[in-house]
Structure formats: structure tokens, C-alpha cells
Amino acid sequence: MDQPSRRDVLRGALAAGAALTLGGGVTACGARGDAPRTAGGDQWRQYQGTTLNFISENTAPTAAIAADIRPFTDLTGIDVRIVTLELTALVQRVALDLASGRAQYQVIYADPYQVLAPYQRGLVDLRTLQADPNLPDLPGGVEDFIPAQLDAAGRFVDAGPVYALPYDAPTMIWQYRRDLFDKYRGRMAADLGFDPAPGGDRTWEEYFRMAEWFNKNATSDVRYGTGHQARQHDSLMNDFSNVLWSYGGTYFDNGKEVGRLGARDPGPCRLDADAAIAGAAFYQRLLGIADPASKTWDWDGVGAAFRAGRLAMCPNWHEFAASNEQVLPGKVGYAALPKGPAGTANMYGGTGVAISANTLPNERGAAWLFLVWATSPQTQLANLKSKAGGGTPTRTSVYELPEVRAAEQRPSQMPNMLTAAAVRQAWQADRIGLRPKIPMWNECNTAIFTQLSRMLTGGASPEEAMRSIKSRVDQIVARGWVA
Image (tube, rainbow, N blue to C red; front, side, top):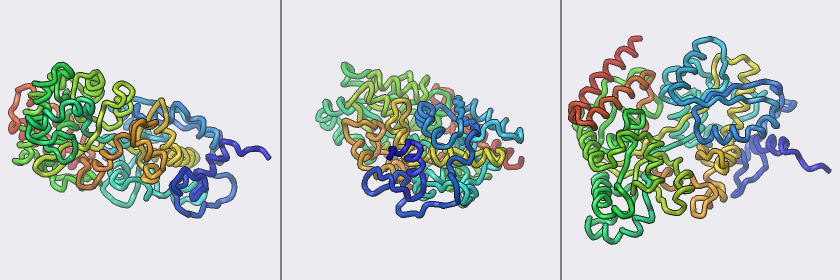
């Protein structure tokens, strides 16, 4: 008898309750005993010959999928053309496409803040496709996605509809030179009066003192104790927000709810509160001892400086681990960010994949097949292993696989999993940092990082910067809400 084809294996794995076991009693689709749908015929071949256009930011999972899209095409007969753009250009292209009434891009990388919140009405409620008996089921259901990520990346205001499936999950964590901490730990502890082991129990004040210690005592090994993504850019808002939240500051009232589900009218900005001003004052002081080039870096810049051996530590997105381990194998450690007076916060930057509501019926069904496949556990596992991409899973079941658990220790064939302990802490409800998910966020964000940059270059005090941001954001929100 002939061996089953790769397509047959994939089809079986994607059926709910499929028996392709990846280990630990968890099936490839993450389902546990679900009965497969039976609608007659081959659900995976019903749209063969269709062409889909997928527009995405150039992210790790998209790079991995683009490098090996053939399994999906073999399974479905659907051709997928992937267009990758910088996020701002993507948002502009998506806005024009949604306004046109006809989908040039059927599948959309739907950033929660710049696509989902402002254009939610132009996206398909995916529950309608999940409920269609003529379409393949979503393996494991939406319950297999990490709950905070499903809300943040997939929903808007109403907890019912799902407009996007969690696709990537970059999260800011503490990255540090483990070899240098091992070398200097005893001296640092004696000089500083506390154990300098990085982790969520360290405070931002202790982080400051550790960075200052490296500046003064380890110049033969590293130039600066800390570096930051503090150029006048979205990266500055992300870097600052970790400190803001840890000091008890918030952009709006009910900040966690506005971040998790979102709001059309979030109310007045609260950056003029004492806690927000205190957080800004500390951030200004921290940047005062950081690598001066921090004010020119986004996340790529600080990541490159860290890998070049210029920095002892930095906050950055956890998916930089793959690059870190290529350049500094075994020399980097990962931990949750420090805490402030109000706790700890780790900025989440994940995004979902969505379907344009302008799609034609056959395109919509084909797009659903792609979403099911692209977010399936077996595809997420393949992305983890990919040399072209990386990414990290958004499904609980993938983290339960023995080979994935094993990859949390060195030597690791999936280096992003070295951050697993840190991001698990970061994704806890009381630690995840979620920026406001509001339709007018993009303009608010620009006001925030513009004034923060002014503060860091000496053009405004922390209090002046926070009050200026509040005034501008209130104007933007009021105008956007009236509109």
C-alpha cells in the first residue's frame, strides 16, 4: 500500500480531533477528543484554483510561512501571494482597500491598534465561518488561544465577535548578558546591597543602580549598563509605557479594559496624574545614564547594539532571542521586566490575522482555510523550527508539547522558547501591558512619542510633557468620537 501523501497527513492533522499526536497526548490540532466535522466531500479542496492575497507586516511567522507556503497549497490547491510592508505603509494600504468595496487583500495582518480598532467594521466576524458546517473547524476552537491575546488581538469592545485570530505575540522583557552577570554578581551584590539577579522581583530603581554599576565598573567588557528604543517613534511609547504602568500611571481610566477589549470613547487622558508624572520623571532619569545612542534607536537599533556587546541589558521584544542566540550563544538571559511602586508591566505587541469583509463568497471560504492553517498548532510548531522565521506560539497546546518544553533549555533548537518562562509571567493578567485599543490611537501615539522625545532632549520637564500629551490626546479623542 502506498504511504499517505503529505497532503493527506496535513488534512488529517487539521481535522478537529485528529489523531496525529505530537506528544504528551496532545494532537496536532490541539483538540482533545472533539468529533471531526463531516459535511461531505473534501472541505480542504473545495476552493482549489483560488488565489489569495495576504498583506502583512514583515514579522517572524509571516517570514516562516512565506518560506514554506507549499504545504498549504498542496493541501488546498489555493495559491497565496504574500505582500510584506512596514506597518505604517500596511495600514495605509489596508485603509484604501477596505474603502474600495472590493478586496484586493483578502487576508489582513490586523494590528489591533492601527487596523482592528479603526476598521473593525470592515472585517469579518470569524464566528460565522467557524459555525459553517461546510468549512473545516478551527482546531481546538478559540479556547486554545491564550485568553489575553485573543481579547487583545481579536476582539473590539464587544466580548462576543472575533475579528482576528492571534498570530504573533511579541512581548517586551528584560534581556541581559548572563555571562557578565555571572562574572560580576558577587561584586555587584556587595556594592549594591542586594542580589542583582534579573527578574520581576527587581525594581526599576534597582535596575537603574545595576545599569549605573556597569557604567562605572565593567567598561572592559561592556560600554553601557542599559540601552533603550527611545527614538521619536512608536518604539519610544512602548519602552516608556512599561515604566508608566509600573508606577501606577495610565493613559485612560479603566486602562486594562481599554487595552484588552478596547473602547470607542475612552474618556479623558490621565497622563497628568501624579503617578504618570512620577513614571515619566524616572524614565527621564533612566535614559540619562543609558547609552546616549538610545535616543536614535528603535527596537532593531537597541537589539543590534545589544548583540554587538555594547550593552549589559535592555528591555526589548522577546522574539529577538533568536538573533541573540545566533550572535551570543549561551550568553543571554531573559526575565520579566522590573516592578515599580504599582507592580510590573510588560508591553504586549501581538497581532491577529483577519479577513476583509469585502471578500467574495469563494474568497472568504478560501481565506478561512488559510487562517485555520496559518494559526494551527502544527504550523506554529513549524514556524518555531523555521530558520527563515521564528515567532512564538499563540496557542496553549503548543507550549504543552514535550519537544517545545525541552526547547526552553539550552541547547535549544527553538531559541525563542528560551524566553518562555519570562513571557508566561508577562502574559499574566496582572502583568501584561496593553496600550489603549481605540480607533484614534495612531494619532494619539504620535502625540505621545513626540512629547516624550522632547522631554528626553531637554525641551520639556516630565510634568510639562505629560500635561502637553494629555491636552493633545483629549483633543484627538474628542474629535474622533464626535466624528
